[in-house]
Length: 64
Image (cartoon, rainbow, N blue to C red):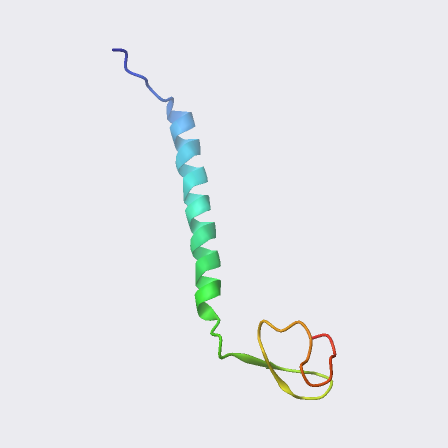
């Protein structure tokens, strides 16, 4: 059975790409965890409290 050797430059490239993929996934996960379903935003038009996932105000219908 033959052994397969990876060139040092290719191995370094694989390690760098892996690092950036892991860092990106971790960053996205941190952003998701930082937001609670109980967080609210305030409508700039009427001042009503809205959940962070809302696209439109539930009180006046204005786009948030």
